[in-house]
Length: 248
Image (cartoon, rainbow, N blue to C red; front, side):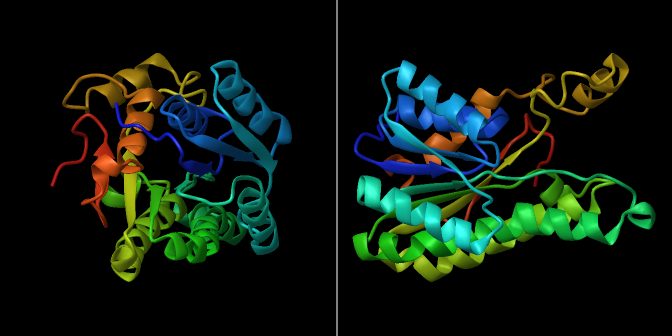
């Protein structure tokens, strides 16, 4: 298991689901973890579980699509822990609809929350990472950003944009020993999928070569690896965690 002892990690959108599991996994491996969510109680809930398991961290309520709130959050982290080693850009949301029916506001919202937030957070941590000549940035994209998904032109565009940003930034900062990678989950069991009708669940799982849905733990393990020293020679890479759903 990759050891993250002594590292300080920020995980955006870590109040529930994949982000929550990522935060808990990084803490389990020794990192001090800053949890973040729009809902303060959700960020605190994740932090409480981290502390219950013997970990250390800080919960910050912030809208990471707002530049001033991002700046304030990263300053608080630096003042508290002295550095930021790992950033996981996980914050995101959906507003699915066919393009012909999609309100312009839903397009703008998804690009702001899913893509601009990652740009703002990454920009905010670059100077301290460059000074330390160390950093790990992991962006949470999606198989929808690789293959596209009907009814998700906004979401697919935002996640494809994250892939492009990952590769471009990886080239910019590699000389300072900062790696930038992305994880692309496929069909993952979360609270959002629990209420789907069984026939839809069966149809979706039949598309997965491994024949099962992924778990949040599957995704968290991939993020933890890319955030570790074991992945020090990997940058600009998109790691699909999808059971073989999207290949090539």
